[in-house]
Every structure is written in C-alpha cells, then in structure tokens.
Length: 134
Image 1 (cartoon, rainbow, N blue to C red):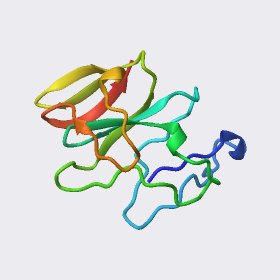
Image 2 (cartoon, rainbow, N blue to C red; image 1 turned 120 degrees about the horizontal axis):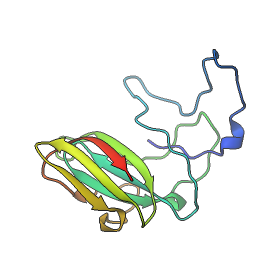
Image 3 (cartoon, rainbow, N blue to C red; image 1 turned 180 degrees about the horizontal axis):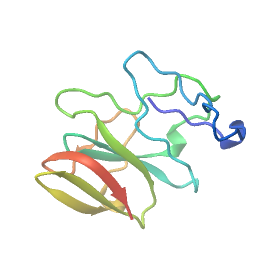
C-alpha cells in the first residue's frame, strides 16, 4: 500500500516525541520507505526482491489524509517477490540495484513506466537486497 499526503499535515514535534501516524497498517504490515516528492513530474521507482522493477507516475496517487489506508502499489507473491525498496526518480537519475550474485546500474529512463497495479519487468536476474539512487 502507498499513501500520498501533504507534508504540511505533519506538525513539528519535539525530538523525544513518538511522531505521527502516516499510514494505517494491517497486522504484520511494515513501512518499507517514506519518500518526499520534490517535483510534480517525478515518478516512484519500485523494485522487488526477485529483480522486478517499474516506475509509476505520482499522478496515479490521489492525495489523502494522513493516517489513511492508502492505495495499492504492489501485490507481493512467490513469482515477483516482496518489495525490496523504492525511490523517487526523474529521467536524469541512475539507480544501483545491489543483489546476490549480481549488481547493476540502470538509468531511470530504462525502467518501464507502468500503472500502480502492475508488477514490473525483470531488471536483474538475482535477488535485490538494496537500492541506491545517484
């Protein structure tokens, strides 16, 4: 699941405070990553543990209230794997996918632009363990 809300809805708090609720989670769910949106033409690049990747326009995510359930962005399964990570990208970015036994650098333009509910295309034939954008 993914939620898109405006950062002005997050009030400043003290350094020892617990924070604010960003998304409502089901039992056994966890937050993988939180991403700031810098430009309206940025896309979200999502990668699975089985080497699949895609990018999705942020225009596909309606702005919701903080603490809501969110929208489906990926459905984990045995073929495509779990979400390994995600990052906001523009066409001038390069992404390093680290995995076992292979790692690969790919241009953001090489990622397919797909809908929120699609799984993506195979990017690397190995298990992805981390993602770095530069």
